[in-house]
Length: 262
Ligand code: OOG
Ligand code: MG
Image 1 (cartoon, helix red, strand yellow):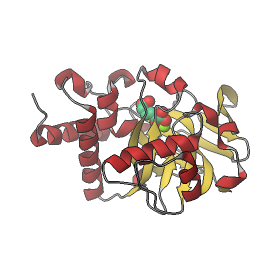
Image 2 (cartoon, protein in one colour):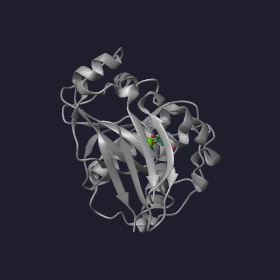
Image 3 (tube, rainbow, N blue to C red):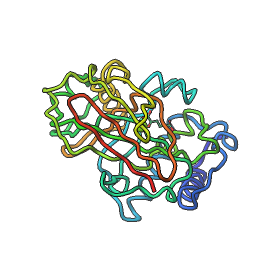
């Protein structure tokens, strides 16, 4: 059975409801086993369109499942991309209210600030470096709308790749001043080290990860625009947090970024 436009709208309502009511829902493929990856990206587009109609705007993209640690954690072995919207941008010095989430987790990422438009289907990591103005430390908060944070590839893509919030560190570094694969990161929770990694964990090089997304977007006639922010994908596994927890990602060269949950 093909997934009709009407079914896609039903799915969007189902996911938006779960997010607004902060409730976990059964993954889509339980009821729509035929949901393909391509249709899942169509659903994601519709979902973002609804959010934009409700008053936010698109400010860039995020990569997901680009590291082995994340792929093994989620049991999904393919990279994905989602859309970042303005309402997802959280400020480092503002406490993050746990009540807005279902079951949030934090992951350390590298944020790319894009200085010129970049579109195509044979874009390389080098092209990405040329188009990038700055990089900065980031923490992404993911909050899958699915029961127990479990999903298949089309499920997570339709759910805009579990996107919820992200925080960017205050230090913007010219991309040519750092060797991205060698950038080490230490993540702490309440001052205890919980995980460590380096940029190379992300498809060997975070710039290659961003290039992958540009090429995927290119297949849909889309691309990066000057001013976009792109999150490279988590370098380590994601860490669950609760009210009272402080999560910090300390990067070599990029400084640190902190999230305090209340
Ligand atoms: C999917 C989103 C993954 C990342 O950085 O790998 C992601 C998930 O794990 O829920 O954002
Ligand atoms: Mg992420």
